[in-house]
Length: 434
Image (cartoon, rainbow, N blue to C red; front, side):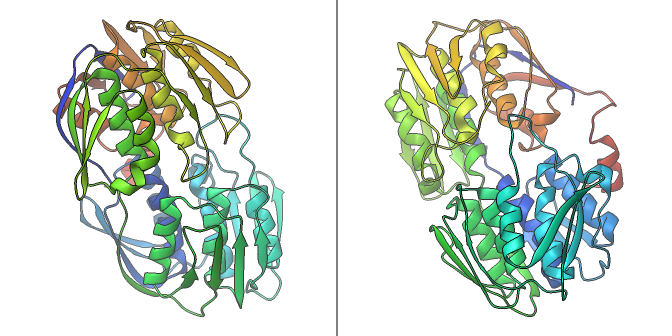
């Protein structure tokens, strides 16, 4: 789909099933390169980032079998090359996990500079710091990140991350799983998908302790065998439907979640007047009347997630009073603000701080998706706005949300997707029929 057309102003009612976690899947799939045997991965989200990664592995020689809509058998034992398809790899940020996986397996790798969302500089210097500490040399040549290890096998090392980095934590974990000796990652990130990656690797024979704390210890093993693993539910997808219900109003049961993972999100929406009822693996969201403003600062887990910042900004744009958002993780993550202003939002940005003066309502307008999470926020804006909103460049959204239009329609939203043949992922879907 190339754009969504939304007729706003309708509250959301019903149930929505949350898919597997994107941020876990895009690390677990590359990590199957380390495994000598078949990995059955369950609860895989059907999103374009996953399609790309599976296609990259298939192009490299992996055997991939579709068991059902959300389950894949992946066998990378036949892959002999440490270099993947350049044009596909450069389309996705998570391609950098292939560096750690190939270094761990082959002792060398050639990976295209990562792509993905553009909302500021996101260096991979902490990844390289970890690989270098384990004995790898890393340099950039002709758009490729080229890495190699003298002797062919990484060696365990102590790595202190200068900043809390989810990507670096996960990539170093992947690389260290088959390294010789013990690797210790200090100042590690603690997000749920880091724990999920560690659980996957351990289920395949790795020896990882401390995931979910700020010190992770990995004892390298010589071999990892095949097995089955189910990916956790997506915390950010669940948070997005919470934000949509908060903004549009209504009563929605968000199913297939781990409520504890959502505490850092729900606490802020409770301050805004949204009511929640936790179930065993679901959470009921109720939003009636006008929201109240609040202040939000994004932080590493267990703080409020940066990936929920654009979504809550939409809700705050129609809340009473003045709200302040402080972005504590990334630079320049407010590119979407200009799009919200087209809809009547009153937001002023100064560096990492956004001051939001709530308005009574947004009005529909032609807008575009700047990146994955900002794109989801634009859809939420369209849902709560009066009139018609057209959201363009929705391929960003489809990188991380499975059946977004279909799920919203089941909740009563008036939204349709417009198909065209020039999607950046059309050729990928033809290569890998999923």
